[in-house]
Image (cartoon, rainbow, N blue to C red; front, side, top):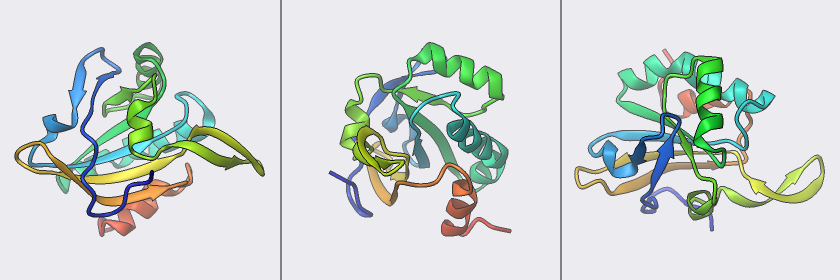
Length: 159
């Protein structure tokens, strides 16, 4: 089931690329950009991650935390972070439970065929002081290239 603006975002606690546990509640009182990508170190996912890396200062200046989420294991995420000098947490969801709760795993079109897999998605979440998050923006089937620029425009962050 896909999430919509105004929905309560599913809470989670996942292992990051450093082996630490990261919960959505850790970001109480902040806004979080949670972006979902299919696989670390693939061309499209690398482009998208580097776009977030290159824009991280402007997101942080506006109070946003950025989190990447994929089904990759923490060890692979650590290699991805190191290889591409990524400066935000990469979360591991190998059993795809959180991906499914966010509607970011399921049927999708790939080269004209219907397949089951990770649906490239982005969520903007407003986490209240108690650690409960509301969905402000839910975007599914986003493009790897150009998505960060579009998100910045959508959020009114363009200078």
